[in-house]
Each structure stands twice: as C-alpha cells, then as structure tokens.
Length: 286
Image 1 (cartoon, rainbow, N blue to C red):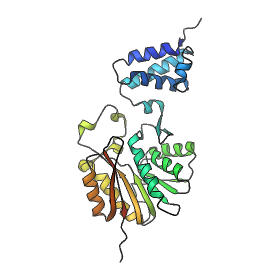
Image 2: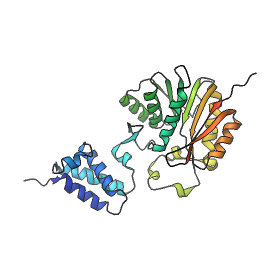
Image 3: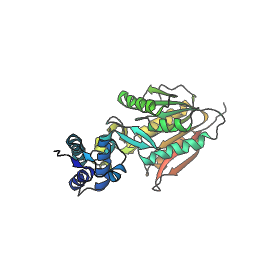
Image 4: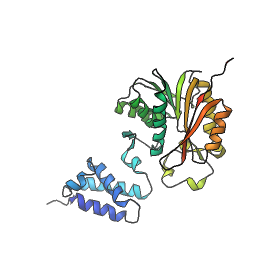
C-alpha cells in the first residue's frame, strides 16, 4: 500500500497554500512540473500519475520558498530569454522580457554592416544578452564582460549549454580592459534603479544582487561611466545600445550627446515605456 498522491491532488494542495497569492495556479504548476521534470501540459494529460512522497516534500519546500517571495527562476534555476533556456543563480539578475528589445535592436543594426562584427555585452550577468545575440549572429566575435567571477561562471555555463562557443569571457570593470577603437557595437543593461528610490524595491527584487540593480546619481552613475567608456572603445561609426529606466530618457540622451554620439534614438518596450537608447560614435576628422 502506498501513501503517494496523484498529480492533481498535489496541485490542489499547492494551490490551497498559494490561495491568497497572485498566479497561484500557475506557480503551483511550474513548480510541480519542475520537480517532476515534465512539461506543464503533462500535469493535465497525466493528472492521475502518482507523485512520490519525496517529490511532494521537495515540491512543498519550493512552495514555501515562493511564499517567502523568492522568484520562481531562482527556485527552478532557469529562466527564458529570447526563447532560450537561461540558467540563473542568486549571483545574477533574472533576465527580463523587456531586455529582449536590446537584442532586437542589435540584430537590426548588425544588418547595416557588410562584415562580421566585434560586439561586447558589458555587464553580462547570466550571459543572456550575449547568448541571444550570438545565436542570431554566429559569425560575430562577442565579448562578455563582468566584474563578478560568480556571474561569469554562470554565463560560461549558459554559453556551454547553448553551444555558443564564439563568446570570450572577460573579468572587467565595464570596459576598462577593452582596447581603444576595437568594437563595432556595445550592448548593455547596466544597473539603473535609483539607489534611493525605495518604492521600486520589492520582495522579489530583494533576492537579486543589488549591485546589478541599483546605481547612484538617480540611477545614472553606471550609465554615464559606460557611455564615456564606450566612446573610447568603439570604432568610429560603431553603435552603443543602453537599456535604462522609463524616466531616464532625457538624461541618457544628454550623456550620449556629451560623449559625441550621433543618430541618437530611443525605443519603447512592449508596455510603451522608454527602454533602450542607442547612438553612433561620431567620426571626427583631425
């Protein structure tokens, strides 16, 4: 005789614990599917299948973590970006859907060049942006930089798993180790949340590395450093793409102009919010 429960019974148990939480049923399904290593749809097509006591205990442990606010990708160890499975740990940010706009614009701009490009993902974190760009541009030379050795280790795992082997990992404070006039394009999602803007802090983001989220000077300190460094590293005519907060557009454009970028444009994300500003390094005759 067994005390094992059915998939449907375990799901009901999890949903009951989650009953006052948003997305209770969805969270229950994602966590149980992860524990059972099956697609979510199988929870319905095989709802009478038995869940072992060990599996149920592991599942309920995940439910408790979720109730405490831990984001699901940190529980499952995986997120999705650009339709790619991305490994995540507490050492890296969870890739956001709006960040895919960076890859979309980079892909468009790359088509303007009639040669393989040298592109840097500055502050790569999990490596999601670099991996997505590399998948779309297999002939490009991609450099992924980060100050965190733990983040670089996660990025390497992702590059190996996704079989994007033309990405060079560099431990670097943004772009200090990159040679002058060596890059055709720089893509970056730097920390841009104002360190003093406490209303943007949430239970969910409290699990993420603060250094990758928050910046001084109304969230502009790291963006300004990057724009200045990018001007040095880019070849004349090269592009810089920066993700930023929806209220930072004017200040970001001002920094681009100050550092001699032209053709500056801002694109909105799927929510209609200003999200990515990009520009081209000017060619100055001397």
